Length: 65
Image: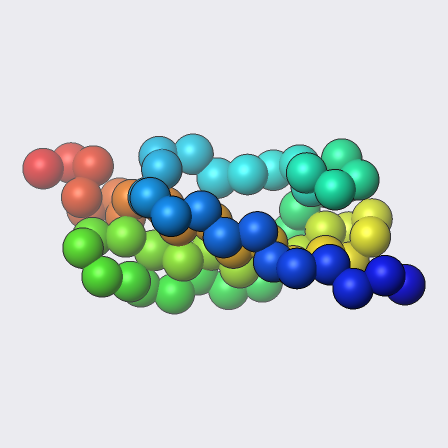
């Protein structure tokens, strides 16, 4: 299996990726970690190719303020 680098966005978004950008497979949430500046880090694994992706997402509390 080829080595795939994690995809890491630089700015928080309000959406969470659900499709692998590499193979279009479904992404499963591995872990959600609280981050700085009212953001969360969502670690996702593709159920198709096994690639790991990291989304930086605005936390729910930041969106209500």
